[in-house]
Length: 400
Image 1 (tube, helix red, strand yellow):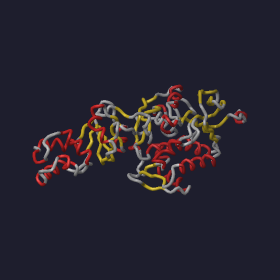
Image 2 (cartoon, helix red, strand yellow; image 1 turned 90 degrees about the horizontal axis):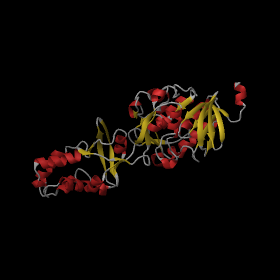
Image 3 (cartoon, helix red, strand yellow; image 1 turned 30 degrees about the vertical axis):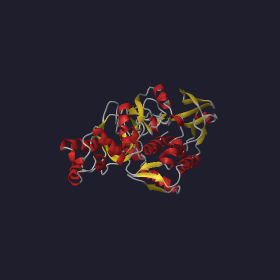
Image 4 (cartoon, rainbow, N blue to C red; image 1 turned 135 degrees about the vertical axis):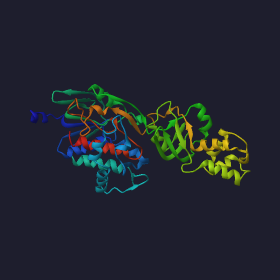
């Protein structure tokens, strides 16, 4: 029976929906095991998110990647896949292809050249594994047949023993991203952790924009906190609110109606510094004094917001305390995020309760797998989401 089935021209052992980071990794792994693999991609180009990432240089992993750098309703779910294929394993693959790389900061690894090198490497791995790639394919339906799955597309029907969903999340819709993978999961009875934009700039309401909107382009090193979570990286004021690495990081933890607390002069005792300035330079304007702690335009905005006398000599201790707090404990409530349009990844996704952490297979639907961003596992900024793609793709590729 099996032999006859394999004679069907449209039958493959494995069909993978989505030729992004996770899908390409899975295809190479499954093909290397001798499985016949078909990769279906709706876009005209594979690995588009890889290509545009890191300003075209691809922050392909992080030296410090571990379970603590990921968010999920089940924080332990990612442990098995991450330990089965680590950042060191991916670095070894990159080096086998002679791709030069460097550590930029905080363990973030980038190509010296172009991110296209990573895409080309994965395509070559797929080619060597005899995985077939079809681009520009529109999938209209997926169903379970007697001995596997049927995928209906605008290029005909394809059948397979195992189906891998690697369609990503809805972030960056202009690249063709959508929630299609969630629909497949729900069709087969899997639950979805409500998705939301993550690693995304935060936006201000009209009142806050009136105060800070003209600071667009000003950047400071900052510690940004939300609840017990904090990140110390750069913060950037924008025309819509706040961005920069520290804000993108905290956006995964922030929820509507919550405040974030920002320290724009980390490691500096602002109050003591201001008191010393009052003693040593009493004739200075407050904005000039503050410019020793934060960028000049930001100093002016803070001085205007707090108000008070013109010269620092006339500021009481209480007023200096208010100014210090405005710099080191700025409590602000964003109104929302910029949404999927600019989000680097999607938080939430296919609930891991229904998946095997070892193989990424759906527990209730043998032969159906979910990998990469479509799953409720979301990494921090800095190469962690690519590592989840490599690790989850590898895990499924070993078992499909």
